[in-house]
Length: 209
Image (cartoon, rainbow, N blue to C red; front, top):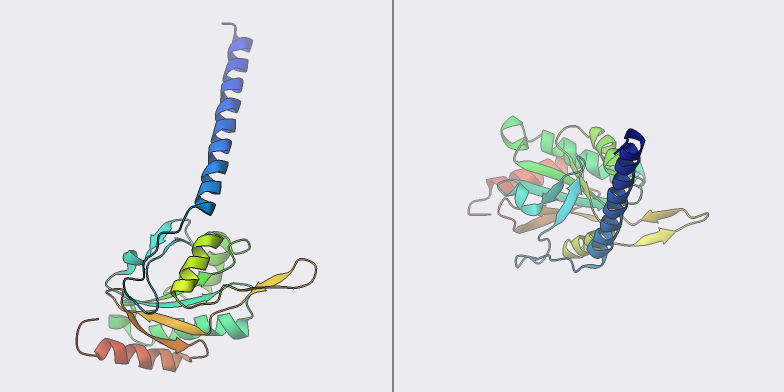
């Protein structure tokens, strides 16, 4: 085979592989978008399992946090700083105030309900505003809708003008124990002092969590 023909052959093969990969990716996306979302509440009145994407483009599950308390809040990065930003700052500062021996046992989690605008890069930048304790996540619209339902958070889009829209943030912070049990909640308007006091109370409580 002459060099020009060989080069053309490899170009054609490369294009075919690219086309097949694109088609497979498209149908894989369509399937994942329409497939049922397998979640479980573990018997909790609020909260349960999830499988989402974190700020590092990696898959993350609720079981990855076993052994630590989870404080979960739903919102999005376009939410006003006086609302979502204030809640996240209170969570981060409240956990920090627990002290070195306890802060690492609590994970403040921000779940974005707006994956179209809140890419992993956007979420990483957003998380940096609140220190090193915050974990950020998002997922497909169908998965987010299912997880929001589990955690009694709204999944409501408010359409505005010129294609603009906003997502309704949660009104509460859900607290899950190190064993994945529902441990209570705090209002989204809680202060850092409120967060510290509540988590101290829960962590000092006798019995298994």
